[in-house]
Amino acid sequence: MTSPDGFNDAERAILLARTAAVARRTTDELVARESAVFFRVGRQSYCALARNIRGAARLDGMVPVPHGGRAVAGAVVRNGNAIPVFHLAALLGGRIDRLPETAHGLLLGESTDELALAVDSIDGFADISLADLREPPDAARSRWVISATADGTLVIDLDALRGSSTLWVDGRPNRTD
Image (cartoon, helix red, strand yellow):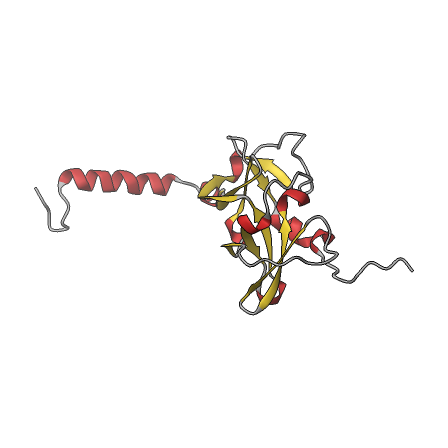
C-alpha cells in the first residue's frame, strides 16, 4: 500500500536502511576515498588522483622540441599555447614503447603553466581507498611512484612530479665552445 509520501512499506524500509547505513559512515571513511584516473604505460597499470589532472587529450599534431632530452616527447598547441609533452615512461626510467603521436596525454597545470604526460592508454576513472594503499614493489618504487592499490596498480604522485626540476625544458642549443 502506498502512503502519502509516495512510498510503499517495502520502499520505505529500503530507504530507511540506506539512510541508516550512510549515517553510520564516519567522516574518515568518506574522506579516505578519492577519484583516480587509471592509465597504462607499457604493460604496467598506473593511476593518479583525478584532482591533479586537468584533462586528457590525444596527442595529434605534436611537433618535436630540439635539444629537449629523452623525456621530452614534443609539444602540442592547445588554446593558442605551446604545451610541452613528456614521456611518462622515460620519467619513470622505463622504455618508450610507442610513438607519442599515437599516445594520449594527461594534461596538468593551468593556462601558461600547462604540460602533458604521454601515456599509452587511458583506462578509466574510479574511486580508490587511500586507507587500502600499500607500499609499491621495490622494482617500481621511485620518487613519483608512492604506493600501489590492492590489485597492483601503481599510484603516481603528480604533485611531486610537477614540483621537480625534471619537467623543465631548455630549448637552447647545447654549446661546447
